[in-house]
Each structure stands twice: as structure tokens, then as C-alpha cells.
Amino acid sequence: MDTPALYATAWAVLPPLIAIVLALITKEVYSSLFLGVVMGAVLYAGADFDGIVNHVLQDGLIASLSDGWNVGILIFLVILGIIVALMNLSGGSKAFGAWALRRVRSRVAAEIATVLLGIVIFVDDYFNCLTVGSVMKPVTDEFKVSRAKLAYIIDATAAPVCIIAPVSSWAAAVSSFAGEGEGIALFIKCIPYNFYALFTLVMMFALIFMKFDYANMTQYERNAIENGDLFTIQDANAETADDAEEGSDKGIVLDLVFPVVVLVVSCVLGMVYTGGFFDGAGFVTAFSDSDASVGLSMGALVAMVIIIIYYTCRRTISFSECMSCIPKGMQAMVPPILVLTLAWSLKAMTDSLGLADYVSGLVEGMSGAAVGVIPAALFLIACVLAFASGTSWGTFGILIPLGLAITNSHPELSTPIIAACMAGAVYGDHCSPISDTTIMASAGANCNHVSHVSTQLPYATTVAVVSAISYVIAGFTSGPIIPLVVGVVLLLGTLFFLRGREGSYRVPESANVNSAAQ
Image (cartoon, rainbow, N blue to C red; front, side):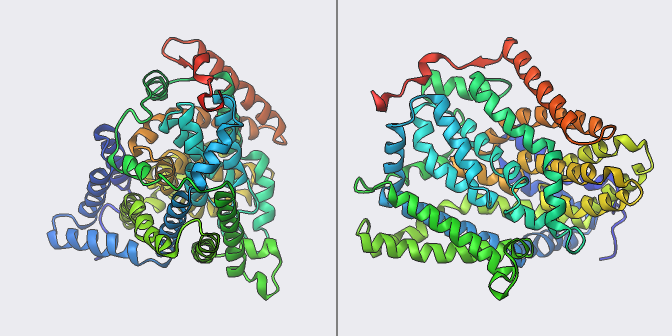
């Protein structure tokens, strides 16, 4: 079919907007995403029924599931699900939870431990989400941390941490959009200007130490602490996944630590292998040139084989029990895979409607505006684009080349402009209901997806508003120090203000009791 009449117009925003609004209203993500896909096909094909059906199936669902990158990610997720099932069946997760509970003395310590583990696992956001959730659920459950709060912590240490970690799949993605030889160097220079990622970390620690929550999260935390209901909105998939995690009593802490270490090492080696490390390329160069989809799935597969051999030799679980974890792990990943497939299909619809070209036109039109506000403007555009499309890497591909073009005439703003594009993309990835990382965070915490989105959105938006103000300041100052300091002060001041307002929820001291340690 020829280019549709509505190509690269404001109508291209409608399909993701419908999906997002319906998901938040109905609290049902599958039908909301599917209706967004159908709307995209209607706008593309018009009144041609055959064209609509063909666009949904051939250009949407089938194309998404036949894309090499997507298939690699799905394989990676399935193998991760199998490894998580193995760790749970061996009793490793239970043993680690019991070990941690004897040492974690307070609710604050439980949340901080979750944050620190998320920061340590910085290689990839998917790996981060599922691993941190599996390991820390027993600990946070003991202190009645709601699953929505756990999902927020997991998500906030996924993309925001990966985007400031030079050795990560995200660094590789960003590097690929820069000029040859400039990728990693540009990425590192942008770290102090990545205000959204840095302020998100400040936000998490501040909320934990100030012991309060606000907006939608208050309902979930109050219900968890006062009524022992970790979910508030029940989710059959989450409860089934929880039931499946009851493991053996024979497990030891090493049964969890060893698989996690093997998985981290294997994934890193898999990524640098695809980048030519074993053919003579340097480590940083290999990482920046890696194919994250192939590398992660390759590393996870090797790790799974090693983990099965380990459990079999240690006789923690038998070989036949290991094999039984394969369908269990795949089954546990069906809900996030379904959502991911629909989210990818929705992106295919927006691509066919020219959403990227529409946004590019907006950016090019404002490049001649007041020079100082360009970083803030690009940040806000990246926020909207990534939120609507559910992809940060796609947003990188659209805005970073445009940002580099703008810096040709404004070289003094090159670093804050590129950092603003990255930071805005991370905001969208962090909180969009159709973002793959958001979906993975829900899966990692075994939390209802809409519960996670609705509770995280106010927190992420608070940080985004403060970040936008910091980018305005960065446009008129030299160096990141002033905007960083102003942003941190403004963020903490906002939190102190919200803590004192009616409607916020302060965690009672009784919630800090560790019954397992008594």
C-alpha cells in the first residue's frame, strides 16, 4: 500500500494514546494494546477491511514475531524464566531469603538491599528486572513491602542504571547512533548530564529513608502494611507465579549465588563475543559493537546448561526435575511475552503512520528557537515519544542523530543536548505501560502490570519535571554541577513538601519489625 494520507501527522500519536488510556482506565492491558494496534491499522488502511486485517497480522503480529532482534529477546526471556524456575525449585531463592532475613533488620534495609542489588546488576535491564525480583521478593514480602513498591524499585534500578553504566547493553545501543569511534566516549561524557537517571536514584533513596509514599502508591503500601495484602489488585498470573516458587528445603545460598554469577558472566561474555572480543577487539569496543539480543540469549543458554550441570552434580535436584523446569519457566514468561508482542506490534503501527517523521519535523522546527531551551525541549519531546511508543532505543535512533545535527551549529550544548535525548527516552521506557522494561519489572515482582504503571507514573513524572528544569538551567550554564545541585535541592524540597501534605502515607515504625530475626 502507498503512503497513507495520515502519514507523519498528529494522528500517528492516537494508537499508543488509546492503548495507554484504556489500560489505565480498564486495568486490562491485553485488550488495550490490541485495540491500539487495530486503531493503527484503521488509520493506515482506512475503510479497506482486508487492508486492516492484513496490516494487523502481517505487518504487526507476524512481523514482530519474525524480527531477529525480537526473537532473540524472547529466547532470552524464556531461558531466564527457566533459570528462575531452576533456582526456585532448588531452594536457592528460599535459602537466600532466609539468610537475608537473619541479617536484614528493618524495612528500610530490605528496600536498600533491593536497590543496591539492582544497581550491581547493571549489564542489562531485562536481566536486572527478573533477577532482582526473584531474589528479593522473600525479603520484601517479610517486611510487607507491596508488590507495586517492589516493582517500582526494580524498574527504577533497570533503565535508569543501565543508561549511566558504560558497560551495559544500553551503552552499546547509544554508541551505535553516534559517529564511528565516538560512541562510548560520548556516552561517558553524557553521564553527569543524565539528570533523569541520577535524580531517579536520589528519589528512591529519599523515599526509603523518609519512610513515606504519595499519590497512587499510598493505597498499595497502606494495604500491604495494615492488612497484609501485598497486591491490592489481585492478579491470577502473579499468584500462580508465586505458588510456583515454593522450592526445596535442601537448598543453600550458593544455589542462588552461583547461578546468578554464572548468568552475569555468561551474558557479558556473550555480548563481547558478538562484538568481536575474541577476534582481537578491545573489551570496550566489543561491548559497544555487540548485538545485545544475540549476546544475551547466547549467554543465557550457556548459563542454563552450566546451572543444570551444577544442580545435577550437587544433587540438589535431579536431572528430570531440571527438565520439568523448562515448561514451567516458559509458562511463567507467557504473560510478559504476550504483552511484549502486542507492544512491538503497536510500535509497528506507529512506524507505518510515520510517528518518527512527525516528531522529527517538530524537532527540526524548533532547532532555531532560543538556544538555551533546546536541551529541555528535546528532553520533553523524548519523554512524549518514548512514552507513546514504549521504546527508548527507538527514541535514541530518532532523536540522537537529530541532536547531533543541532550540535553542529551549537557545539557548546552538544553534551547536554545528547544527554537530554537519552534521559527523556529513559523516562518513557521507565513508565510507559507498553514499554518492555516496565512489563519485565511487573513480571519480576509478580505484580499486576497496571498496578505497577499507575503507582510508578507519579514518581517518574515528579523526577521528569525536576529534570526538565535542570535542563533549562544546563542550557544557560557551563558544566553539570549547577543544574545537578539545583535539581537535587528542588527534588528533595518537593518530597518534603509532599510528605507534609494530607494524603501522603508515612510508614509506621511497627512495620520495621523483622519477625524472622526475633
